Amino acid sequence: MTVRIKFRKFGVLKFIGHLDVMRYFQKAIRRAGIDVKYSMGFSPHQLMSFAAPLGVGLLSDGEYFDLEVNSLTSSEDMKKRLNECMVEGMEILSVKLLDEKAGNAMASVQAASYTVRFYEEKLPVFSLKDAVKRLMDKDKIPVVKTTKKSTVEMDLREGIYELSADDDKKEVTMLVNASSSGNIKPNFVIKELYHEMGEVLGDFDIIITRNETYTGTLNNFVPLDFEATLF
Image (cartoon, rainbow, N blue to C red; front, side):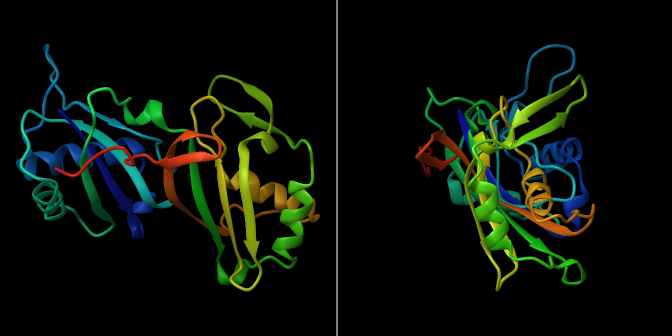
């Protein structure tokens, strides 16, 4: 049986990288007494699969991972036992049972929504709404994306599904492609907004929060645990 666990990451734990988050949950699951399933072989490990790894420095209210278990109690019981093992900066939001035919968390990710705010001393001097309009009016936004293996040019516009700004709150919200084939990082979008207005975004000017992670298709995105059920 596989359960899909939704959690939030906040506070100082935003500086903890993905591999350390995985190790953290492996220990928490053991402490919580969850009847987790292990792989076979000489080096058995817990069978878990995270959705879209969160970058260092980002906050999130919509992180997911799948966990294979041998037996179940109830959604509330598992959530309670896990939360009792959490530290400040991690919170389990829900535990749901996946259908046997459901794809794993990582393969299911298609989009993600973000809110970007600015540190008080780093507020933009231009209208965010104007910048968003000018950027979204473009047919193509060519950017260079550097990976560990190569440097490629991509069209950022294709991966931005929704983009809006609130000048009063000084924040930008967006829904972007988060699939493995076209993953759009929110700081890319903000850098292009600044570039559009003739400004340069500093390395530590913004606070990024992932609001939710989605599966589905364009115009029909649903949260990653939409089809999972409480038990």
